[in-house]
Amino acid sequence: MQTPLWVPLVVAVIGVLGTVAAGVAGVLITQRRSDRRDDKTWQRDRQRERERWAREDEDRTFEHRRESYVSFYESLKVMALMAYEKGYGFHAEPELPRDWNRQTFAHLNRLRIYGRPAVAMAAATAYNAAWRWGQYCKHDDLDDPMFHDGQERYDEAEFKLLLMIREDLGIPGDTEGAVEGLA
Image 1 (tube, rainbow, N blue to C red):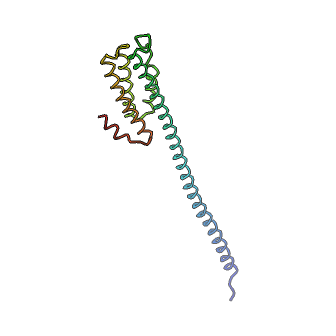
Image 2: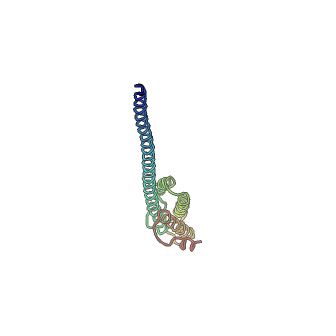
Image 3: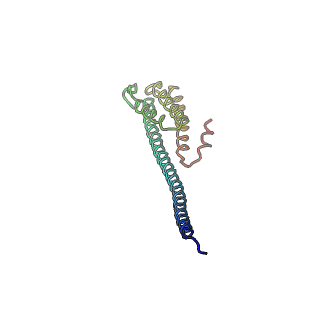
């Protein structure tokens, strides 16, 4: 008894088909795993990229905030000096120039954009105190109660603002005790 010829051919075809199917299945499984790994790597890279962009945006915003705080504070000090000099009569003119507060107001508006809301409120309070001090004190009259009252209000508002700016920028120092001491 001999095995018919078609049986080994069928077994050979089944073997070849099995090998091909196993090869195709192996390639598909490997490709699928590779695609998943690539997708995870891509998502991880995208997440890192988003985090890097967020850090850069935060750093850039911090620099804008710092710059707006410093420029406003410097301008506020100039404005306060003008009020002080008016009260002491260091200038020949009895009134301050019409636009004596314009630059400080422009810096205040920039601070409102980049600054924290609490600091912006403190800045507006300090600006208003400096403006009132300069606007309502008398020229070369140190007996004027408006001069001393205005100076005291300005000094308090300016000090609170300075402490809030330092706290917001993370500048080390004891700010909490100083703020509570003013209350």
